Image 1: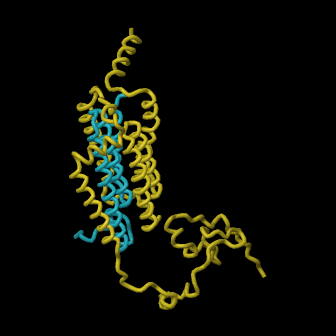
Image 2: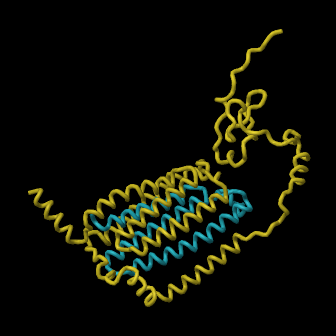
Image 3: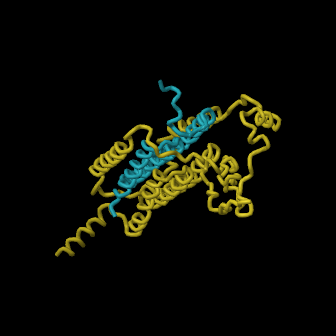
Length: 99
Length: 268
């Protein structure tokens, strides 16, 4: 098996995540799709690390995980705040700034 | 001849950056499952199901990390992602309401098809770029880098070359924790509804229809589960008899199947 298959898998997962961000309307599902994209990037980083034979890619992947954890915490807090004021987790309903 | 050349190319391939067979078997079993689950995240209607599929994708990725000599990241992936992040997602889902299944009506007309085309285009672009950069390149492997152990190797890098990034990330974590606390904190703008307020609200309404309380769910003598709407005297189901939570989740059985046949009108 060619080692680039991992990279192709990561690209496929990344594209699926991007598609999810574009087509889904529920803020939580959109958020999960962003997480999927971050995870796909991590898989690519780990594979690059293996191709190049040093651990820098894994360190970068580790930092990505930490930043993703921060992002989840703050993002979910924002979703809860929006839900509290608008009683909806749909991104279409957060349209106060429109018009 | 063909067999020979195949054998030769296979042998060559084995020497230049191909992984051993068990890993290939694992990859070809798990990768389709991961892609299917990822597509499922897009296609399923309920957010809870998306979260479960997401957890599966993350576990699959953790197995891939371990297969790729990134033992530490594999364990961290399970602990941080499937453990903490997905639990946080499920927690918020329960808080925001499991009813957050969304309508699949397009609000932006004709946005879905261009999105799919754009995603496929993005994938194709990335694959071609990555293919140019990596296909056929021999993988160095992590045998040397992981000689002292994966954790030791990572620690050596993290606390020497990347120590500044490490400290900045710790500041980011603290900021995120504070930010979440500030965002999720809410001051009460009104006192909670007490029984007295609820009673007043019931009697001040336009109709006194539910002044004595909402009807109880269940079709008595036939089916008395809480997810079946009660039948009104005229035979129609009473939607208010089922709890709001079950209604918004869509977990309601129709009560038509439990209705009795109409009695013939008696003449007297």
